[in-house]
Image 1 (cartoon, rainbow, N blue to C red):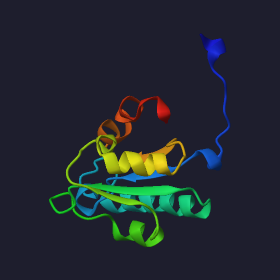
Image 2 (cartoon, one colour):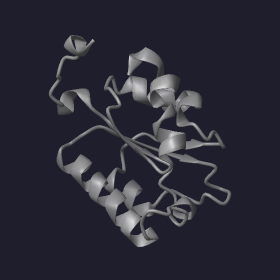
Image 3 (spheres, one colour):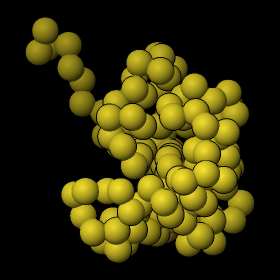
Length: 132
């Protein structure tokens, strides 16, 4: 089984940054970092994505409710990036517009960042199927 693994060097032509649920209300719920540290880490990731000209997709969940709006600095950093405001889908992969945006980029979603690793990150291989 170990012989079946083939190392593939990461290539920016075959990558995308998915910024999932980086919303003002949700940033305050992160327990591993202070809200300011978490936001600064997200913005550092965003700045790296911009510097390396990686395709980036922004998405939020239920932003008119307690989750709050997208962190404004992200929209400022990526003014022309696809932005999908999900009406309440917890798993972004359950939202047709988000899936279409990822497919339309014709990029793989190897680089992703979600607020809840268990909600936004782990379902990716299951929810996205084999096309990512």
